[in-house]
Length: 228
Ligand SMILES: [Cu+2]
Image 1 (cartoon, rainbow, N blue to C red):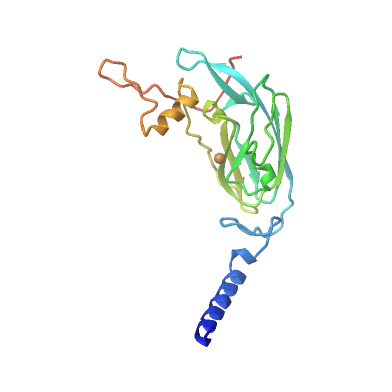
Image 2: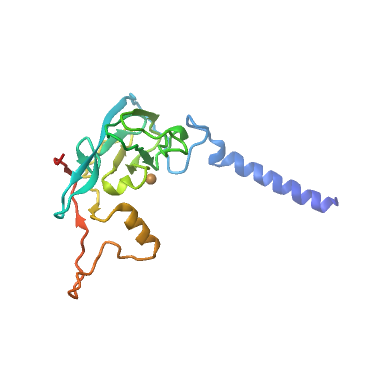
């Protein structure tokens, strides 16, 4: 190896080392080794608490359009209840699958946590079989507005989606209103999925044959479902 080539490789190695030592990769500030992009370092006095939610999942029949359809509720609600935490607290979420036959799962979308608690069944987390309870307990290392949802089949389309809010630590909360934009269609979730794969942007719109094409999807505010 000539001297010039040796010097060039040496300079590249030194530059790489400086990059690694100065960047996020070397900070290692949280419990999982490295601090991910978008997280902040909380400061000031703060007494961490454990904030527990119990979520009970049931299947039910709803009727928004004149036709009975299968749906899922969590604590009797569809979409699922909003979970609110504060950065630095510990989330303890106890999920009860009260369905007779169907298995389920809950995935905490965008939340930094140990992979075993990510809630993707058969990949990182065991599925929650009918009648089982699963406990998710993890420290909250970030703040922001997120959502959580079932990761089993397409249950999220039939009601299993909800908001997850993590307030900043040591910051007075501002007045807020959580808004979940959601809709209902009588079409089976797998049929919606199939149509989306056929590059059809209008899967929820059907022609009546009268020349008009009314939208059959129903805008659905968050509500407590009472039907059995
Ligand atoms: Cu997700």
